[in-house]
Image (tube, rainbow, N blue to C red; front, side):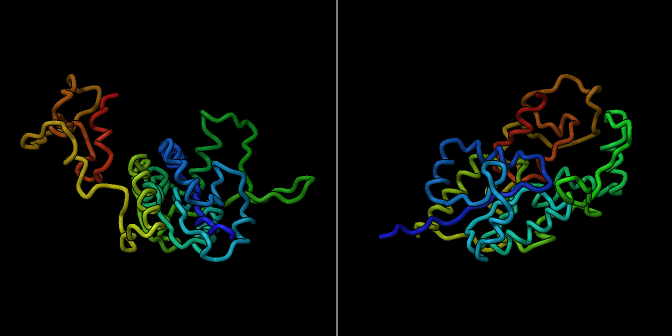
Length: 263
């Protein structure tokens, strides 16, 4: 009797730094559970994979896709539509996919200015002022490189998204918990949350899990780092005049940033 095929898993890296990929690998031995319960069919950073292989799959044949990064160029957009067609569950994985994060800051500048900064500034060795071209002819044929879009978009601005897992990157222990949940669902021991849910984070703010002491939260001024007195390791950063996004950030990271500041 032929054993039942394992459900298929995919992960893709678009406009982001790659930290989300590392966070998945940082789940350590739990990565073996992924291999034991899923057939990893597309994960370019970890395996040899071709777009044509995904295109040949039946629509909806991939159970779970983790997509990290925003949509910055036409290749990102093409693969987002491709993986959406092939996947039953599409997760915006990491802050870049969910809300743009650091790459989204490029939306404050025109594309030409971004390219000029990358290829023609004092830190770039480009004396001939060579800029990337979307098409280029070489002896082997015609080369095509992705073309930058006018702005970066989040994943759900391009395709339908089932779940959101924010974090820069998502915490490895949270990733492991989500993987455990999906495995339990496959085994009939649990149910998925409703579509559109935010997963892999807490339900409060970083402030609520931060052990720094909070008094009256009276903030008289924010200070430049060079003007700071010695930082009290036990007192709330905001109360010391140090900007902290804890009140606007979902919990679940063990308040890593305020605990490590200054590092």
